[in-house]
Image 1: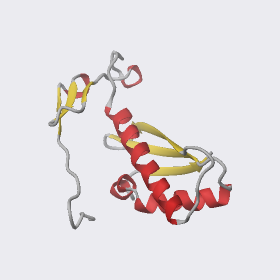
Image 2: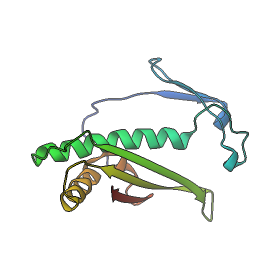
Image 3: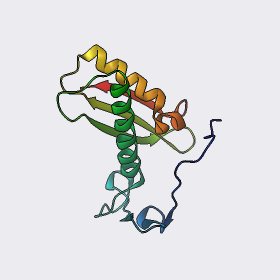
Amino acid sequence: MMRPEKILYETEVTATGDRDGNAASADGLLSVSLSVPKSLGGPGGEGTNPEQLFAAGYAACFLGAVKLVARTRKITPAAEPSVIAKVAMGPVPVGCALAVELRVNLPGVEKAVAEEIVAGAHERCPYSNVIRGNIDVKLTVI
């Protein structure tokens, strides 16, 4: 099990009301309503859900790792890079599991070089490290 040698940042979020409730950070910067999507048997609604929150966090974190790897290789994309995190959930023999596809756009960077950058980012990203071996992650350069 990998654990940081030194904690650089820590946050705290409290969820209430299950998947049809709310989640809020202790510092007040995050406060979201949660709704169960219709595809999961819920009513839908205006709230987000844990899978969307995970996708947002993973996409942002992975983009930071992509930019770090590109900078260390002295590669500057022609325009702002982006990451689309597609998170899927479905049944497994006991419970449910997630699968992730990270679609990375590095404008103006040759595909082979972009794939190397993405692979390097996957080695460095904290989200990738925490789920490695537990969640199937597909990396795609677009």
